Image (cartoon, helix red, strand yellow):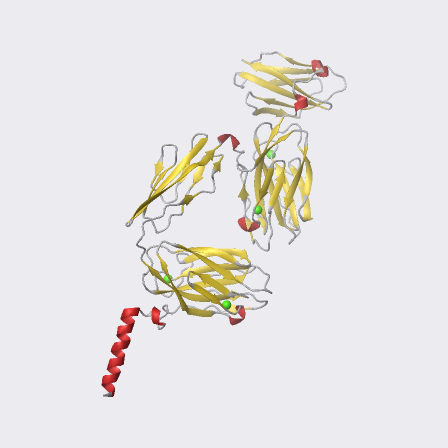
Length: 500
Ligand SMILES: [Ca+2]
Ligand SMILES: [Ca+2]
Ligand SMILES: [Ca+2]
Ligand SMILES: [Ca+2]
């Protein structure tokens, strides 16, 4: 009798499990994890006090609880969908944390730091980030989701490394097959390009398995995340058709990409990296003439705004250069302008602001006469921990480097000057081998000479000059009209001549 009743209970339980699934009745959990990292050096409310992810909304104690197994909290998600994850930490903790997360997609109990990492957030207080569920994971099974929060001056969290001050929390997710066709979407960070190279990111939902891109210049690609090189200036409309086993969808963005090949600054052989970012170091705004660029701090590392943030200035004129670095940390702030457009910054005459140990410095910058004209020139801004003596190529310790550009126009006052000009004689004109510049004045020293071709490109520059007579070799110049700029101790003259 007893045996029969036990048998009935067993059958009912089995039926229950088959019908409703293990996880729905609370008996199940992910396979055990290979590790449960401890919290070391807990203090000051570090850790996680709320996780909100899909249907999970769990408020908990901070890192004082150490590793916390919340796998009783489960949520079901679709393959190929992206879900928002919110992580909160509570006052009085006012220190930023590094966050990371992993999902045991293959259900082997091991959280692989590369293939199963689903997000990384560096040095934030509270954060909202996205988790995209890939295809190919084990379906309809309880899988472990692990979330780590750690002191941002410690090593970044790994799935099995102990935590410094913060904590790890584990949850359960169940991934189910996605029956939907794609919803096509894409983006790029290069909507304005000066080198013509544009990389696109597929942001389609529901896991497309093939892609067809139309770049707007008659070319296409089947890659998921293609980079394309536009050969000509213009504005281009871009389309993407995304397809999976359930169907297709397309997305078109009209006039999405603008290519301006003339805006390209000279290449430079260094782009300083940010090491050990923390605590709000870096640059949050730059204002200079028409440049007004508000950005994130050093968390973004090196940023090249030389194509998208450019301004026109006039030689011999002063402009306020204003760098916002925030009030958290004094920083060493420096600004360089590549006035001679050689792709290199020298500290003698191209370091235009040197503001050590300062907050939000600004400086009046006088654009010199004699710089390369009518050409985009690279401007470099660096903000870094106090006490380093960085050059324009050194990596930043905590802070960051940002590049901008300027185009220098001639001052109106130097157009075809009068008066004493007649005492500087240029001959022969036209020329095909050499030209001579003779100075008939007694008191004016020539400080430098520069020659520009018909499109404003500098083809000659010299400060090694004779007081009375200078000879310039033009034998290798292409035929055409040239402008010789004569800069003296008193004035600037323009002399036009022809090479034949
Ligand atoms: Ca917690
Ligand atoms: Ca795994
Ligand atoms: Ca910035
Ligand atoms: Ca230079």
